[in-house]
Figure 1 (spheres, one colour):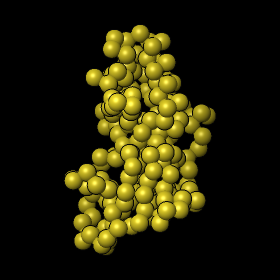
Figure 2: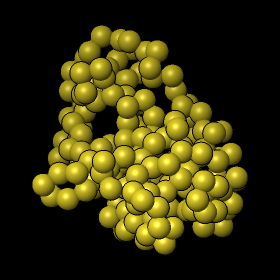
Figure 3: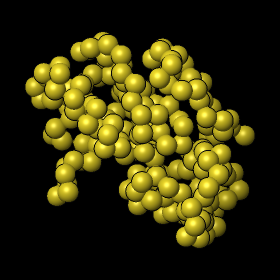
Length: 188
């Protein structure tokens, strides 16, 4: 079973150390498991990242981290919890995760950005984990690709931090580099 302990505090780590921790995290091969669909898990992930079962919040963070390791996005856009022997639907209000903390080092094309998710997973933005902005009538919704079609909504304070960094750098369009890739933050 995958490790479900939270990683160390990213404020005290270099981006190199964070990248090594993120790369070392081993997840189950959910993309290769194809059991028959068994029904509904009676679980829901709210837009704020809170996991619910039968309407009640799941209070054990370790349990949420464990469920997150077996979460998969299906080709039809739906979400399932999958093991080698069963597949259960799970409702997701927006994105299954929330990026709640940012660590940035460097400037311009040399910048690296790491995010801590609400499930204590670490993700370093780059070509495999791009940032994107979806502009809606309610304003911009920033996302970070986590894995296999699963995204993290970037929490509003973290988004403001990204915008401030981009404005300080003065790029046109406003945006930031990470992992050798430029990410526009204007929603275009």
